[in-house]
Image (cartoon, rainbow, N blue to C red):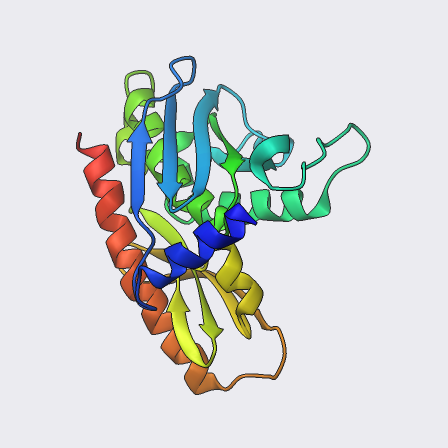
Length: 245
């Protein structure tokens, strides 16, 4: 009940075109090459990035490196305990989100400049209040950029591998109004729910979405994408601030 009240209050404190408060802290995990913790409203996602001197089998003998990601949720990240994954019992949703994050991050990198290397990005949700996959992409891009900077000491071409930042945000149609950055309570109300990934230049990387009830028009989609683009522009500024500290 208390969580419900807090979420309702938080929703009323911002307009439909505002992001939740967002912060990104870097290098919070000293044992990893790079790390980034994103706090977006009540949602918290910790991302680490590390490098291996090998590539997947399908890239062996090529001149390309690789970037891959995994996504998971801590048992206490949700109000109802999230069961841990067990060997032989993969969670399809978590696998799908990890693939989304991996695709998004590869769109930011020139893989030819990472020959022989794989960057592994691990995203762990510490607290979930909506928008966790989008937050994982946004923080993952920061962790990846830091990892590539540090890899440049051993592989000089890695310094130029990151082409641009990518970021993601959720948007939806709530009570007929395009709404940015859906928390859990807003997500439950949304008639349309989209997750949008873009580059810092405003180009689309991926759009995932659906109507939760009535089908929606192309004009509604365009309004939601325009709102997402504005939100991602603000997220990119948060990323830049984190990278230049």
